[in-house]
Image (tube, rainbow, N blue to C red; front, side, top):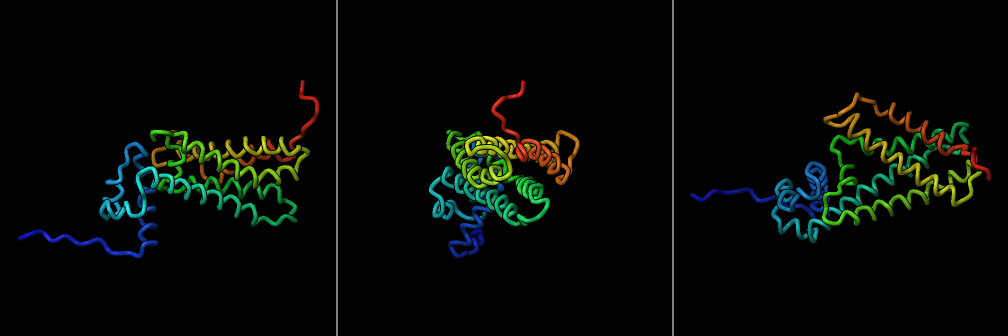
Length: 219
């Protein structure tokens, strides 16, 4: 007697694509780009490879779909948090910095570790990923630098320069915290999320808010 196997549940196209993306995020985060195959994703999603290829042309297409989604999610967390602060509040400066930084750390705190996709250099041409991250940072600078400009005596070019440095530093600190101080296998003593955010906000506050730009550098 032949073995009868259950057919995959048929889903509307949009739902199937969303399911494949969710599954692929887990697989790529666990295995990395180089060690992940389309077979791995299809098997985890309980679909055939032809179904997977109906939605994504190849592994690269799938990976960058995931990258774009993660960057969009991170961008939304930051901008939504900053826009929620009452600009008339006496502590608006501190609240904006806290909410923005908290959004980044919450993103990396996801126990599934999807942020690791943004750090993956195992693909054949990591420059493509670097370019996506650079575009993301540029968008972030476009959004944040006017705020820095309004709250310091920096000119526009200096504001963008400082903002890019801060954004890069916060992203680095958040990913290092998630990997080394909090992850499933931390290598350093645990630092709670709120404590890490507070430390980072202090760094941001001293680095940008009230930054004093003079014509003469300190001796």
